[in-house]
Image 1 (cartoon, helix red, strand yellow):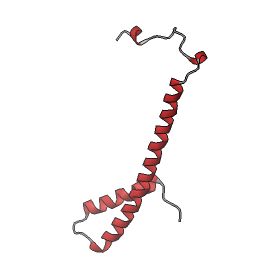
Image 2 (image 1 turned 180 degrees about the horizontal axis):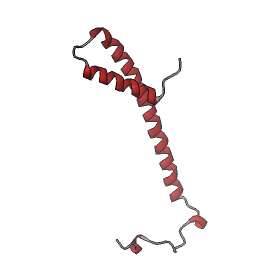
Image 3 (image 1 turned 90 degrees about the vertical axis):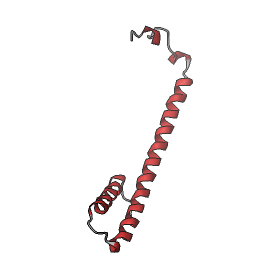
Image 4 (image 1 turned 90 degrees about the horizontal axis):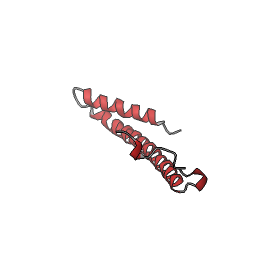
Length: 88
């Protein structure tokens, strides 16, 4: 069985939250299923969010590293506007 997508897992969490929020009387017979499915869905969402955060951190780190290691031919020429030139 393949792992659900983030969107599917998030929909499961929303569905179970709505069920628990709107039920008039707790249905203890369904509670174990709801909790088990919700924990699994949460783990899928958390893994995906963690992976995206890590990828973004790596991408931003590479951009910052590139800015600090600019070669002389890509370094500013002095003709660009500085912060002092901005009128506001």
